[in-house]
Length: 255
Image (tube, rainbow, N blue to C red):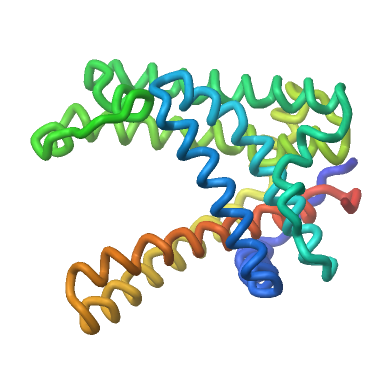
C-alpha cells in the first residue's frame, strides 16, 4: 500500500465517477442507502446511547457503501449483505473496525463537548438527545457559534476517518495507523479534495434550487417539501458512491 499523489482535476472526476456508478445500479444503491439511513434513524430514537452506537457503526457502514460501489464499478449488482461486509471479514477485522468506530464516536463526542463551551451544551443536547428547539434558540448567537465550532472541528475529524475504514478492511492497517495514513493522503492531495468538496457543494445547492423551483411552480410549498427530501437522499447516495473513488486513486494497491 503506497500513497499516490493525484492532480486537482481528480476531484471533479471522483464526483463524476460516483454519479455515473450510481446510475449503473440506481435501484440497488437507493435500497442500500435507505437501509443505511433506516438503521441510523432507528438507533437515533434511543437518546444518547443510540446516537453513540450509530456513530460507532458509521465507519463500518460507510465501508459497506464503498464495497457496493466497488461491485457496481466492476459491473456487478450490489447486494444488501455488502452493508455489513466490514463486520464479516473475520474476528481480527471485526475488532479493528469496532475500535475504529469507537475512536470515531469518541472524536465526535469531543467535538460536541468543545462546542458546548460556547452555548452551554444546547447544540450537543439537540444532537444526542433530540427534541424540539424554539426558533429563538436556533437564532441565538451562542447556539449558532456552537454549531460553527462543531462544523469547523469536524473537518479534521472527517479527514482522519476518510480513508481509515477502507485501509483497515482492504489493507489490514491497524486502526490508529489508518487514521494517520488517511489524514496524510487527504492533505497531500489537498487540491483534489478541495475541488471534490466544492463540486459536491455546487451539486447539492444547484439541484436543491432546481428541484425547489420546479416543485414550487408545479404545486407550491407542500410539493417542495415532498420532493426535496427524497432528492436530497438520492444526491447523498451519489456522494457516498463517490467516496470509493477517492480511496482507490489515493493509494497504489487496487482493491
